[in-house]
Length: 348
Image 1 (tube, rainbow, N blue to C red):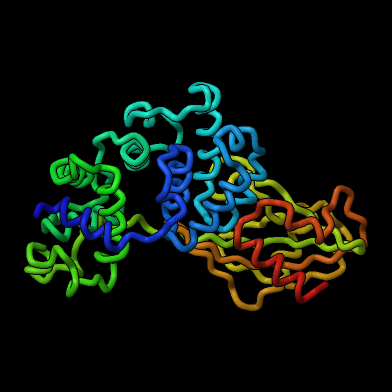
Image 2 (image 1 turned 60 degrees about the vertical axis):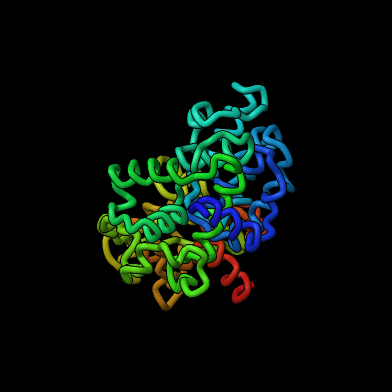
């Protein structure tokens, strides 16, 4: 029995019942793949169901406001995925008449779609002979064949793509691609893989050479940058506050947040107070205190955010201010959403 045949047999016996498994609809396959990038299935599934309910077709998604899409995406992180999702939906509607391209090469022309996603859609929806290579597939192939080329290097990526072509199923690419990803997620997991009951164990190089914990190989990540975010949460006598939309490139683009004072270190009370007039154009702040005694650390891939929420009380009426009861309507980073929930429960 070949490698691909063993994967297909395992998949037939062990596959999970997931909401996108019973369809070949390229819109739904694309939606699931974008949501599951950088996201575990358990976390991503409710978001997938929420998006399908709110946007049953690619036309519905293209016609939606970015703000609504970002709000539904809130909590998934890597918000560029949501913005690309919207842009791609518009491309499919405007340039392809609302019909997804049915080939790998055409799919690559869509915004936010790279090799993996194009391979997944073209193979699962249209049966094109394109192997998928995601984190799970890298792990399975690296361990089974004993490959120590770094998976996050150009040379390694090219090698694994060639290897994936060589061993893929020519008879049932749709189930094979889903099967090898599922195998990597469940059987050949990153930590504590189920090697004892693995159908590939007798021919797995990593198993034979005791290299399960050292494969696959990854190059070291770039240095993590530390940033200090001081959020100024203004409260007037009418229970109104201020939100500002993040502009420019970078994390959380177009999401909303409290006025932000970024610093290169943790600030004390006086250091924050001295900058209030300039940052808020507010001269009558009669009370300032830090809400979170313990630093909130939010870890992203290349940066760690050390965040502090400073409550600023004012007797002035905030013209254009937002009532606290309306804050939940705005798409905000999960860091701020958590604060809003905690503060409302303790203050109002």
